[in-house]
Length: 312
Ligand code: BDR
Ligand code: CA
Image (cartoon, rainbow, N blue to C red; front, side):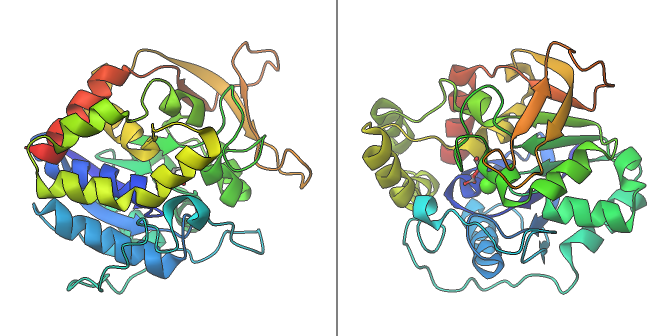
């Protein structure tokens, strides 16, 4: 059984990814959920992670509070304008019965990785602040994790936070830069790749809700703000559930339709390109590769797996 740590800034698309992972009981076991600020404040992200575990209704991994702010940036840039002020489409749910563990997320990552060298995979669905903090405390985690899956970076399209930057990198560019320089066996699924052909269409929604499964209903409901945001901004009814794309690629790697190694770097100057994720795909800089970049995901297979996990 593959063993996984999920690091998340729990907004509505993170919730789909977490629920799907907790229901993929034949493929992976989630050892811990480590929470970082991002889409909303840390407190709300922790609450939403606990809610996701409750909704998944399989098993309850320990949930850890992590960084409440980026490493260097003074102010947290949030995406409540996308996911709603509660991160879950203005559902404003009551506090869950379970609570987070007492330890810090960075320490939980270190303890888990170092107690099982080479065994754990980590997926980051939010800013890289927790993982960078863990690495700064214990650099040996970089060579002791089996694989690191990162949702982040702009790839070859505009960013979603600024024209240059994708949200997860933009919130904590210095953390992302530390991770790129640390030697993790990392595969990046960038924003443009995660968006390509994957948005959920009205026909998909009919399919998802066809058997009136409470989990599917919850997932649809919690994306209400995200759907309204996409409708207003882009004028269409489709909506992207970005974090669930990398989660399906992780659980079912055969849906990845290509990947390449490259030297990547984050722009850290605080101008218009702050947080830009540069990929030297054609090796123009002659620098050693520090990342694997996923180039395409089979969108139909992604939706098929995701919908199965949310409705069985
Ligand atoms: C990322 O930004 C967040 O709003 C989503 O949860 C996702 O992790 C996409 O850029
Ligand atoms: Ca996220």
